Amino acid sequence: MSTIFDLYQRCRKDHTQEYVELYDARADERISDLTGAKGYFYDKVREMVRFYVEPGKRVLAVNADAGQYLAWTEPSRGVGIETAPGLVEVARKAHPEFEFHVCAPEDFEAGEEFDYILILDAVNNMFDVQTALEKLQPACHEETRLIITWYNFLWKPLLKFAEKRGLKRPSTPQNWLSKAHIEQLVTLAGFEPTAHTRKILMPYRIPVLSELINNFVGGLPIINHFCLMNIMVARPVQAPDRGKFGVSVIVPCKDEADNIEAAVLRTPQMGSHTELIFCDDKSTDGTPDVVRRMQQEHPDKDIKLVNGPGICKAENVWTGFNAATQDIVMILDGDLTVPPEDLPKFYEALASGTGEFINGTRSVYPMRDDAMRLANIFGNKAFSMLFSYILSQSITDTLCGTKVLWRKDWLRLKNLLGSWGINDRWGDYELIFGAARLGLKHQDLPVRYMERVHGETKMTGRLKNAMIMLRMCIAAYRKFK
Image (cartoon, rainbow, N blue to C red; front, side):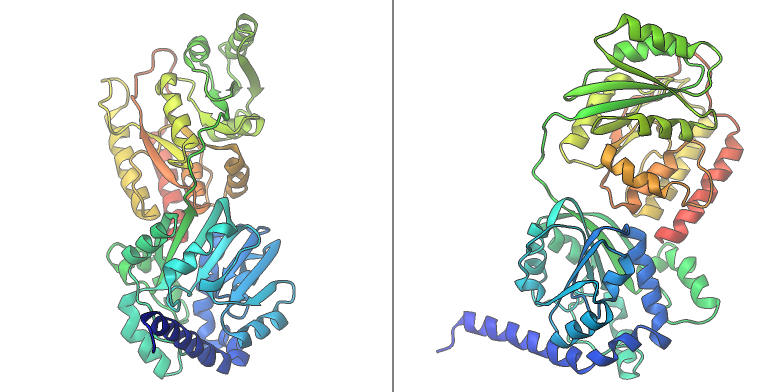
């Protein structure tokens, strides 16, 4: 007599058989499907994937199709699993440099760890999405990122029509999932979403018009919800490791001689070791001499002095980051308008796993009257709203100088500097956009913002800087939206 479990197993077997029969029957045509009239869609998907995945990494592709997903990412090691044996044979012939296995996602047993796991156009076809995601946990280390794409359920009738007209590859009955569904499944499987966006409003190539629609119109509010493809980045949820990490506090300074001693005395010792790196950017008021005096007066503290290039604050900060030797890098502006006493909060947020990019925000607590000019407040609010829209996550302050991340992530992020089409003189936008592109978990942390006690503000030419920031936002809009 059949049991309920027998029915479940038969249902799963029927699902797998239907998938294999459908995709194996067209396996030999799959490579040609990726070009021609349908090629534009896959070109856009490739752009999406390459935006989030760094080349030269270890990559696993779930439902690897004909192997194109691995090829797009240029991995140092590529492994693909695919339910349809015919597709696996096609993939092996097309991409012998990678390793492919016949395996349903729900049956996968990981024998190694990967930097990226691609789940592209796969959750729509899975029999049990949660189980398939759970099977990926052993393939993850703490920095692994899942890249998940799926169809927007609003396109269901159009995709059915495209299949009947031969404009789309036939598919098995689909799981039509919303963003909320995927978030729930990802969370239940032990992962945490770090980013989400929608892409491709026009999946077919119409000269000029398709690029205009996809690069500009598709990212607009409301309209963006009608894009064909969803893409989500997720990270494995790790048990918090509150072990002692070393900290490098980077203090970019130019003519801040009167603030150096306060920075040394007020910066707390954090983690296993704290080094204080003063990056002097061609000061003329004797700032380096004060740092050297602090080194002599406080031999118990690890105080370093490095010479900045004298170009802009961003280049000065990068100099400090490159000189850092500890696990965590923190920025503490030399004007001390963000109190050094707040830095342990940033350490705890990063070390506990609450976030991977901790961004100070001055928008929560009331400011002292002279802390920030009114025009700066309104400008920062406007750019914060713009950033929140572009990155699809809440960002309440884009220009607070205090930002904290793992040094190992900085070594990855610095490869992205200058990729936003314009030079960021302050560095804040480079860090925020770069962290988002790497799929780092963003966390705002409220700080008290004080008025400057000594020296003069370096934030001049506000209108010119606003235009530079706006141009960077336009470039980021095109990439993220």
